[in-house]
Structures are given as C-alpha cells and as structure tokens.
Amino acid sequence: MATMTVFLSSDLKTWVESQVKSGQYDDAGDYVRELIRLDHARAEARLDLQQIVDNALASGISEKGPDELLAEARARFRQASDHDL
Image (cartoon, rainbow, N blue to C red; front, side):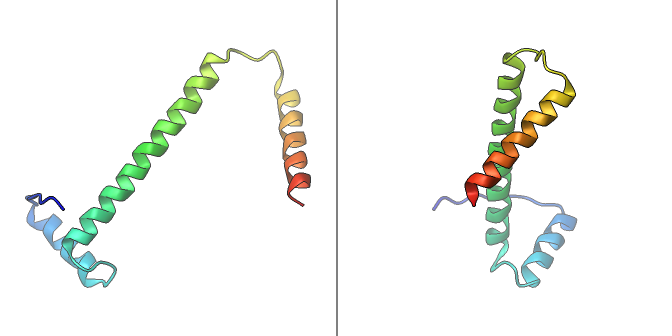
C-alpha cells in the first residue's frame, strides 16, 4: 500500500477526527479512503451519464411528439413489468 501525506486546515482536521470518533471509521485513513471511493464512483457515474447524453444528441431530433413518446415509454414499462412477473 502506498503512503501519501495530506495537509489539512485545522477545521478539516477537526472534521475528520469527529468522523472517526463517531465510530463509522477506524481511523483518518479509513475515512479518506471512503471519500476517494465515493468520488471515484461519482466520477464513473458522471462519465456514464455523459455517454448517454452524447448518444442521445448524436441520435438526432425525433419526429415524435411528447404524447407519442410518453405512450411508448409507458408501453415499454408495462412490457418490462409483465416480463418480470
């Protein structure tokens, strides 16, 4: 495991210590590792969402109106729900 030194303001140090004292984390390193894991997952989700947006933009403008799109979405939902039964 690699070592990294991080300098924190006294307010941030107090915050990290309070999180450890809460009993949710074994030590400051455990807390920081959890924050990094959460940030990594958020970054991956953001990339996934950006890919969805890029694909949607690349697919062009639909000729269908809102009512037709909503009806199709409801039909897909019903079909998926019936399939799960």
